[in-house]
Amino acid sequence: GAQCITSTSMDAGPYHFSWKVLPRPLQSTISAVASAGARWNAGNRNKEDSDATSAFPYATGTITSQHTLPLNGANGPSPPTDLTIRHIVSAASRHLPRHEAILLGLSSRIRGYRYNYQQPHMQHQPQNHQKQDGHKNLLQSLTRLVQGNIGDQVRPPIALSRAISGTIELRIPFERFAKEGSEGLLSSVIGRGTVVLFGDWCLSQAQPASSALLSEEETSLDGMPFRHSSMGIGLRRVVQGIPLKVDACITEHGTKGFFFGMGV
Image 1 (cartoon, rainbow, N blue to C red):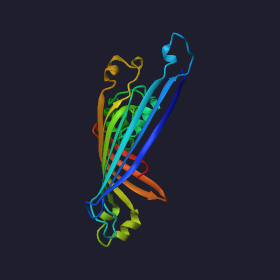
Image 2: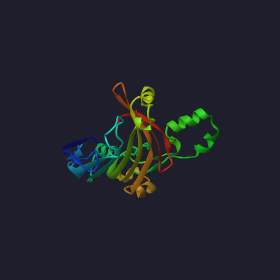
Image 3: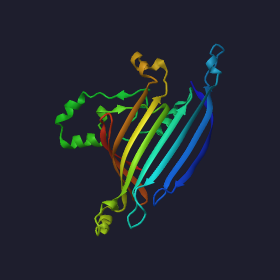
Image 4: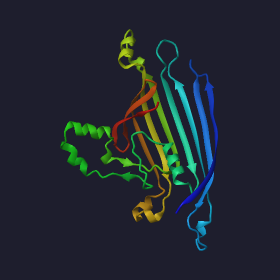
């Protein structure tokens, strides 16, 4: 039946800190967001159904910290190289609405994974067709690579009740790869951009689902913590004011491929 939801949220930060440890200072940022609310059934009510008139309160919170460490000074014409470390800690109480659980999961996504919006556990896609595809032509193989090897991919659940995730990135400007005297040629060919070496990890627990929707085997997996991680290389460039990115990565479950999008 239909449900009514009411909630309120509070943000703190972001708070910025700076420490003079190198020619360029170490920059740190921390922020937090918390929300609380309640949900209740708004469908047909009857006197025998006590859940119809009961409110189910919930609360959730997320803390994000990011630290940027300069690896070289700001002297010279080339932009600096930075090491960025980011951590996100999220947790929620019982009765969390599903859309809130999905938002919690979206804040801790790991690059290279396609997520499962249905079951509350790691979903293993069948690998039977992998042998059948072994003799296909090069174009079809490249297509599978760009799509991220969908057939043999592990899909983590997106709706979470708690998660701890981290990201480490080494951002190197294109100009750092140019030899002395060739900066002009490099800029004319690829313009200004950044190479990103990254690693992502996440330890999380899925939002519990109704046991009526799960088999006996799936129920035993429900609520168990799980880990997934990836590492790779990416390119960042702004074209006509639009930030574009492409990442090539491999996950700890063996999924690999190219991923395109917008952002930094």
